[in-house]
Image 1: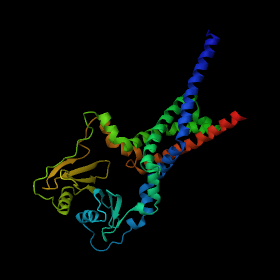
Image 2 (image 1 turned 135 degrees about the vertical axis):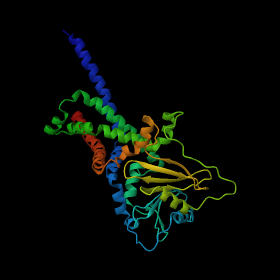
Image 3 (image 1 turned 90 degrees about the vertical axis):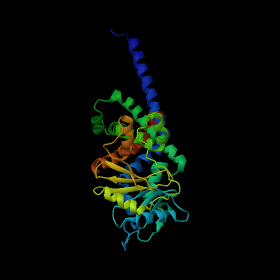
Image 4 (image 1 turned 60 degrees about the vertical axis):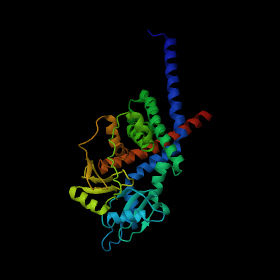
Length: 360
């Protein structure tokens, strides 16, 4: 027979351990409750980012098609000739003739009407889509908000793990209790169980976007998970070739895939980079020498570095949004993100009820 004093001591030890996990889950959750709620809510809404952006900026997706649109070379020159001049880091190729070009430039994201040459920024005026993105990525507080969002994401992953430890002793009939009793704590536990793994994945992948440049060197060591981009040696006294003939050449080399993006050679040793999609998750990259027009390298899904780090680096963006896994999965992923906000609300409600009970 077990000794009663030993049994009481064991129960007290278990209660103390549970109390520690509870307070960790409770207090760190409270500290970043508002940032987590905002990030999760906006993340769920942003599954419709493309639709919201097109609705919010109709004028950029319902252009009047008049005459022949500007060539890609003319588009790049229009950015470079603006006041102040803009360096194009990545040019998004329009999907339809009535869509504007979008470019990530040295001055932020800037659109261009290929029929008039007019430049516009969505950040110049109020934009729902811009506000949602700004809150989700920066908590609408610039660089400080971006770092706070990353820290909050780490905390969210930790609170999920602490919540799992707390839930484990009560794991039997979790969903039955939520359905029959319907108390806030029961629903908090049930929803936490469903959303825990997705929220951890969203948190880790979200942090990778913010801290990737620091994370990759640490985990890759001397073996990069992505091969470096090809570079070129600038011949003395030789100018770079015009962009438009190179675009024509690349289109002839890739006739059966959709051209999605272009990164021009902005430095003496950098190559032109062209991006294509074959309609699946396979994205193709083609690099050209800007001085000779020679194809330097072509990368697709069949040429990939091996290992978990390389796999994660290729796929963390997709895992964060589930945007390329089908609309049903993407919508479900968005609902689970909103579930993170509901967990914050129910957690606060449970806490308030506990305080009232203690005071009473």
